[in-house]
Image 1: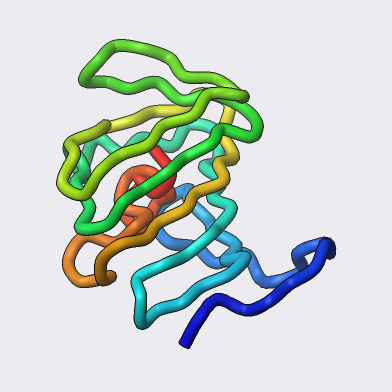
Image 2: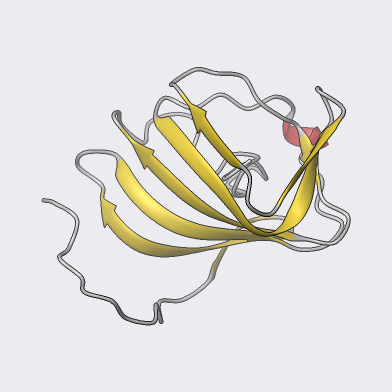
Length: 130
């Protein structure tokens, strides 16, 4: 299976809760290849501290579309327009957002075994995207 061929359109798929305060809208996915593109949004006040530092078995690219999140390990805030590219296994987070954040997240190059692509960043834990 491969990702679907899609021309420009307004995504109308459902927003699905993936963790406390975290929702995702899958834009395109190839589950067999472990490849996914999703919008992930964290509600104001979401904190991934209970999940701790996140590591994923996939490559993860994250573009912050709106809002901001604070990396509690680095004690650094990241805001709309910023981008991250993380190889498999790279530790990141935990995160907290005071006012909410929306991310465009791409994952690829592995399987969805173990830690989900949205652990802490997006919110599978609360990390997906983060």
